[in-house]
Length: 195
Image (cartoon, rainbow, N blue to C red; front, side, top):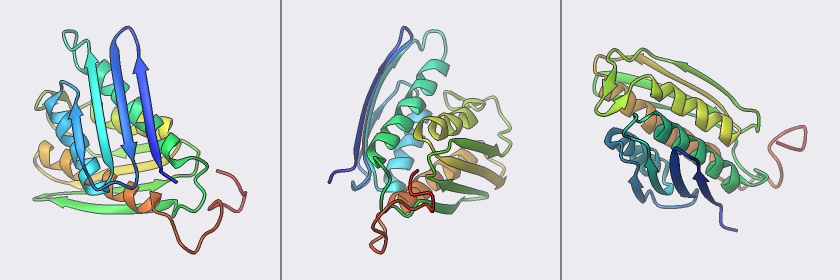
């Protein structure tokens, strides 16, 4: 059965559509109007081997906040929809990713219980055209709306671009590992019997 999430989110500030195929090949078509964000989401798809299409039109004349936030909400919702009842998945995984001098670690548990911890200083106010303060917010929004436990940290690094890139690559790899079907598991990966 296909593990696909399709989300349309329309507000007075944004119009967002997200298509996510968990069993894809890493194909990405992303247009949010925020170039650096597009670049980071492309890394999630490529390194997670997800097929991901994102189309967003937002009030960028105000700033990028609403667009970035609503795309993260829709991406989390698409992940939750694609996972269904989560039967048979590996559920928990982590990934370490280096990008030149930067090192990031992301741990996920697709437990159905949303929680996010983000540790890692970004030194500048912006990376490209993306406010650095929005990066933790993206991770929190994905965790909340994807119903997962997500811990992300940058252990060290000098360049904010490298730190962010390591984080998003690690997110893709951790989600890829956690969403995989475990051939030994026939049901829900929880002693509770439900996620």
